[in-house]
Length: 256
Image (tube, rainbow, N blue to C red; front, top):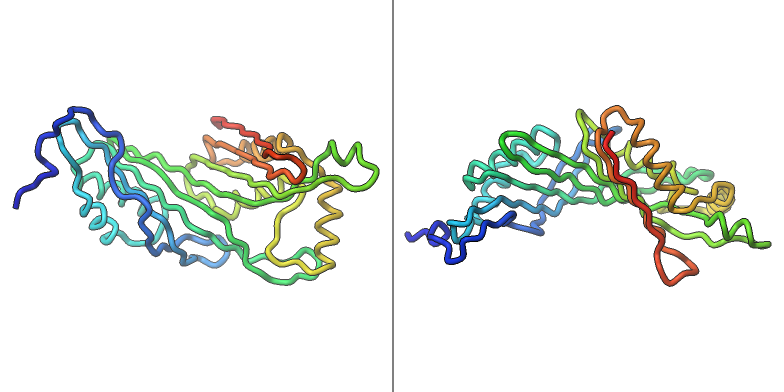
């Protein structure tokens, strides 16, 4: 049969990334306390395409994924990148897994159990046999405005914020550790289940620990700099302001 993809391209411009995007697939992720966690991921798989080729072979991405173990760790991630690179005869391969990660939590006073969801991702690329890998977590938190608290005779405005951590690392870096860093850097963690006694505790403890987005991102960066496995990170904080028609934002990016 005719291989149209390998026919000459009419426009000789190389493509940086071409492949499949938004594929849903079952995934097994390592869990610090329970061993493993079964979840569902969105997968993006790409390779580079030289200027002389008209197209890539999309089916080969799916074949590589079907042959993969389905268990996410450093070695299996690298193995999939290598397989894609070989099957597509590419110089570079790129891969992203984005998935919900669930942690059991207890309300701070009542101890009521619940599950909290965090959107996480593993992403990376392979070129010349050298993998580059990143882990990311999105962690909702609560902030109380220090300025509002200082100038108001009654109360202060508070809001939910999102801490986003992206890190390049060596060894085994637990998602739970990054989530804990984000939660400990804000006025308060966010909970999925709170009884009245818990709401009282969370509100009062958050007001005892007011924080701007600048404070939160600096707190996160300080903790990430101290982590022995992390050698580059990007910390972002976006506050969904409750009394403004805009969000507040701060970001720190550093090599460790």
